[in-house]
Length: 224
Image (cartoon, rainbow, N blue to C red; front, side, top):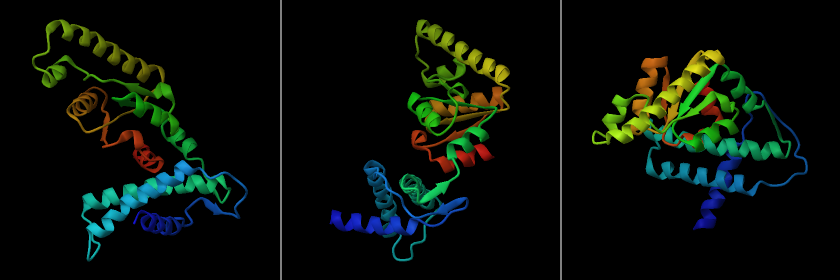
């Protein structure tokens, strides 16, 4: 059964490898297969395949299911394109350079270090990313934990003030024109986003798995 599913996924990969804008198809050259990327592409397509069975008999998807289906396809496509570019089959514009260009004068606030690492990997400069695990006000901290001890609250207050000073310093020093909060959709992230919107007119993007955000989705966010 597993071999059959992998074979089906391989067929889907072939269909996914279509010519794209600003992409040139060339004869393959020698190279090394990135097995990890290949396996991950197949896994994403197998996840996408579930929507085929889920939507029987007409294969019509709701907006929510369409979003899930397309996310898996986009993630697979990104990995497939990288594999093909390793063999010089595809010559694509550098997505990292495009992200770097689009993110100029942008500050991104997130809640986890692994999201910061993912953003840096995709082309965002490290100084343009701030990680904070706490809300941006004492009032919001009390909303999360009304029973928090005063002594603990004092320590958190210092961290909040440091984070806000850091944000304001970067906005002035780096000529920041736009602030984006990119984080998972949990109560803390929502409060950070709402407060950042009030303080810095921030755009709020709550994503289920921001550390796995695709290049294309990040470009779309930065293009708005």
